[in-house]
Amino acid sequence: MTTTWIPDATFWTDQFSTRTSGHTAPELFKAIVPSTAVTSGDVLNGVHALRQAKLANTTTTAKVRVYVGEDRRDDLVEPVMTAKTWPENNGFVAGIQNLVGAERFSLVVNNLETTSEHLATGLGKLLAAVFDGWGVPIGGAEQVAFIGNYSGTAFGVHEGFEDAFLVHLGPGVKNFYCWAPEVYIKYTGTTEPLFGNYKWLLEHGQLFVMEPGDVLFLPRRVYHVGRQNEFSISVALPMYTYPDARLLRFAVMPEILDAILGEEQAMLTPSPMHNQDAGWKPAAARLAPAVREALHKAADGLDDLVAAAIARRWNATLSNGGWEVVEADLARDAAVAALDDAHITPGVTVRLRPPYQLCVDEFAGVHLRGAAVDTSTGPIPPALADQLNAGETVTVSDHDAGLATIRALAATGGLTVMPAVPAK
Image (tube, rainbow, N blue to C red; front, side, top):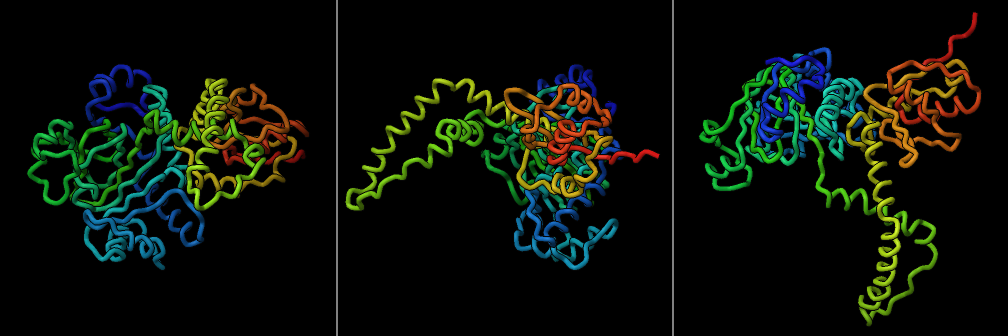
């Protein structure tokens, strides 16, 4: 059964939940992603962008790992990414084989979506459909590329910890095996990954034959491995539905503590010098009441503090097209660098760069492309936000507030700016 691109609401209500047994069973959806959306060549271009960043000493969040068989070879990352000549097109496999000194290899790339807007946009359409049809993972998603001619996934037969969609781009065919946890444990006697010779286990797994354009839904907790005889590229889209405790630990609690204590208060009174002979106990006794006071103060407005922290995270993620917000995004930085403020004059026209959204929330502030927007020059007009999110091209004629608003939005890299056409 084939599915139209982009999967619409009926796909999620009529097919997806049913065929995956309520999102708990793996299922292959044939020929979903067309070559017009994203290709294996686009992925290789993304890797090349990382190579160029490496050569230019540009900081990136995306990273490449190199594997020979099941061995992670961090020593090969540098020679692969800084080689004098970079293999292209049909010579890619032979070129990488020469660089790693092995016939079979795999490259694993995290946060591939940050390497090019084409990748962020192409698979962003599928991600938007997932969000609209199924739901939003609080941590967003990323693109993890698996590139190579490996005979088996370098991680061995292993367990997945997030729901994910695996998009196969080819050019070769991939055999993908899955085991429910109870089946895997029955045959292996363990919950640990299985490396080496596991061919005996394959006959007990569920086989999915993946061709270019196919999408496999891979639920969390399912054990799996990909195998192939020829070069191919697949991109996984893990849905980061973080446990509540983890979300509190790295996102919510730091913001709450910052709101309670604040930088000014934290700098008011230095701690005293502590007597070495007395040890650590007096210092702990001094701080314990301060902790109690801070937590007591937090309790009074806790609901609002939690709401503000989650709202900001929610808006940042959605404004970034659903991709997780990272520190160093090559594509975003390139868009910002290409911006010319001199073009933002009366009559300038602007539109949103897909797949990004403008999220305006009186409670959480304004976000575009994952960044908080400076609104010190004035609020974002609701009509402007609606027009931009509808995909419209907007002409700005205002000399003051309107242009200042556009400058603030453009500083995120989330706008395409087209200079005003001079009057004849």
